[in-house]
Length: 228
Image (cartoon, rainbow, N blue to C red; front, top):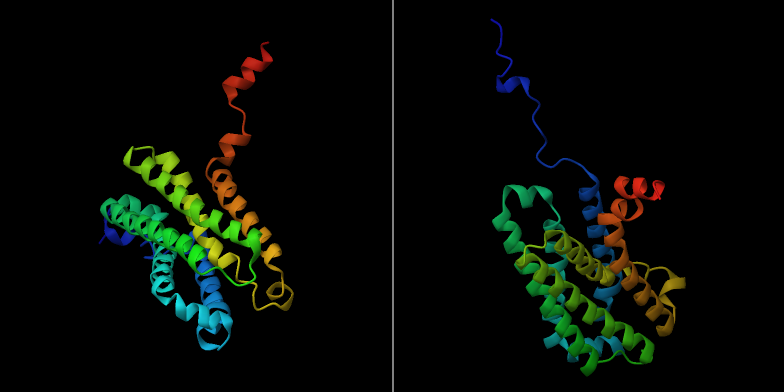
């Protein structure tokens, strides 16, 4: 018996979680976060030193700050899922609300921690970089939210990407801590690391999302130049 060409059996079944660049990137981010958690953050609460005592004193601030930061780190990638946006826009909006609330809370708490419990010996350069990072985190997220509620989707994507780039600074600035050459850098050198990562977080999303438009001349404009 000839099978109908339109029968379901003739169509390939798409995998539930196709392996693509985004999934690999998110997996890589997860590995980096686990590394930072094991080699940088856990020693702060298990080793009896000045940092350990400082952490104990500001636990009432650092715990909600960390909780909101981890929430943003996890919710962020789901915001960039085109599958979620297309198949479940309500979930996309709710995850976006969770991300925005988490970032706004975490950034304000970071500013309070910076003011009330500065890192001993950090110096003015590192303190300035930490303050700028928290402010940028707050502002980029607020702009992304404003663009979303006003229907400016292209701008929303760019600013949300910048916001998540700032979110990743926590991981990226600490992932090399197990290496001796990096763990011994001075506070001033670490401030340069933070400023560099902030610059990348602001510039790279624009290049990734709009790089083709930025560096490709419009055909109509090229013709106009030729006719001058």
